[in-house]
Length: 290
Image (cartoon, rainbow, N blue to C red; front, side, top):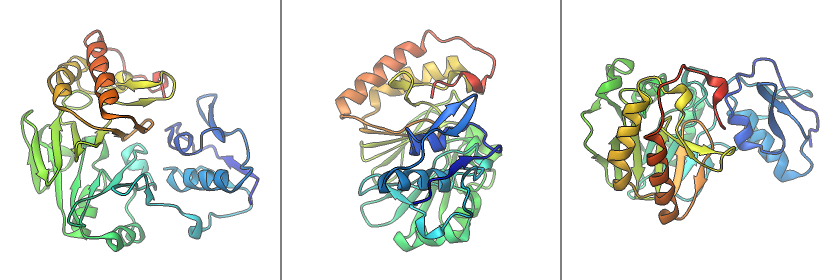
């Protein structure tokens, strides 16, 4: 077991490594640091996951390069959803997900860094029919993955300039079924074209609209990096919250969370109420309550 891990100075404080290796990697002085070396096999797996997910490849063993055989991704969260890992610096280090559909096909929600090796891993699991973009910040590799899989690329018209050659364009604010059991809920706020995707009334892929905060132990909006309009985000939450039912919160940034559907619905109602009290503020990444 390698017991000499560190985080190099390329770290952008994106939080990805801290999500995957809590207790081993923590925020220190506005960046991630290894605060404890792995002591057992489970912790070794966690720090390897953090290393293979880190968008700047800043989580490193001093002994040398990462062993590809220890790459855990795609990492199954359950029988339906896998975390892709290999987060891209071109999507601000966002998480992305593979979603298995009832017929055995797959949908990709946002994308990891582009790699033929990663694409081959996904294709080995089943045909990828759709690449669903939650918003403009996560669009960087969408077209390339969609073309590789001969899949449909989706984006909302509000962010269409980020993927002008998308195959399917969501419009307005009405909820739309984009595939069996997969519903798109337009949610302007973080950006003009932000979208939630909810699969099977169990999994909510929230992009950057809201996330689970370790600091508050609750669902939060990323108010300090809401690019378009915090008032519009509040209005969107008020409009859509009553329609949503899910158990898994799976954001682009911030922690994932699994709760009973009724408890998640209660948290969403409380979030929608809190959002009504928010006012515009300058963009400030340091104010994120991860």
